[in-house]
Figure 1: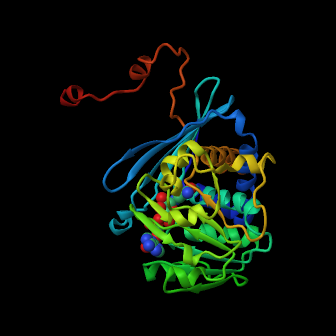
Figure 2 (figure 1 turned 180 degrees about the vertical axis):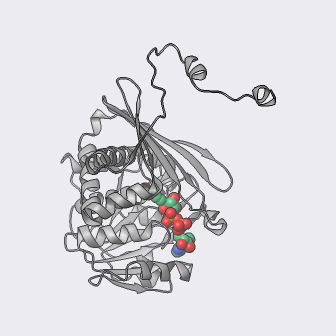
Figure 3 (figure 1 turned 90 degrees about the vertical axis):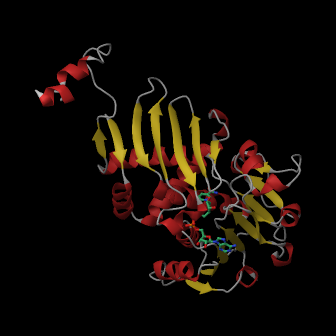
Length: 349
Ligand code: NAD
């Protein structure tokens, strides 16, 4: 049987164990797999672009499990009542190819992106970081805010979005956190002034320049998430040039990340190297650091692995007959004769 996890089941799991523990455990799972980078068979994701968006497949495997995510990115979707990012994914046994899990990944993408941001910020942001700006207050933004508040000690968040209703929604959604101060700003330059960390999480299918050099102060850590497709960026090339840059998987980020604007030889460091102690992260407290995140298959694989274990442990989820179970595996046709098929001609009779 294949385990099915839908949106309601994810919500039930989070409610059962608590959002802070859920985020912490997901971060630990992603970090553990990043530290074992070499055991994974990796590739850049397969993207199908259109004028308005992109649809991507993100596969990865180790010697035990194979996973993939289907995900889109359509910035104009919200005007049609649909999410910009929608996703689902599967986990299968390498030995047999049997699909163990079919899961929603829209909500989970927001969790895993926040968890990945925490994993990176723990090794790259200044240790005493307390104030963060979030530019772009759409679907992903509160997940980032919650994770940084609960797991990294951020207690003040400056927000800016070109859509005022998105800022109001953000502030309302986080109003229950009494130890978190949220302040709205009327532009990016004011929002980022004096902060320790800047998270950019906007959606616009264009070469945008949300962050320019005049906004950058010594020691800032930039968690850049929305520049994740060819022709879709957020950070001005001159900001990139003045910073030390970290990426998830260089092959993929050269195509999709903000660094698509730079020379192919411009130095970047893959995050796994820092997490496994092979490369230093931040060299000093005045260094400007950018995590040019695009989202990598290993994060979804880790999330699927974690959800599968949690679903079995908590007894939340459903087993479905996605793959036929047969006494004689060669008799696939027998499935048709066992089921009472109603054909058009039998209806007529
Ligand atoms: P969303 O459409 O729900 O929200 C995006 C927000 O950005 C909107 O509220 C919009 O008004 C705002 N915005 C657009 N241009 C802006 C500008 N110039 N200044 C300020 N705000 C602006 O989208 P979402 O689901 O929150 O995703 C946001 C982005 O993050 C997308 O580009 C998506 O592709 C990317 N993303 C990256 C990762 C990753 O792993 N790196 C994961 C998920 C999503």
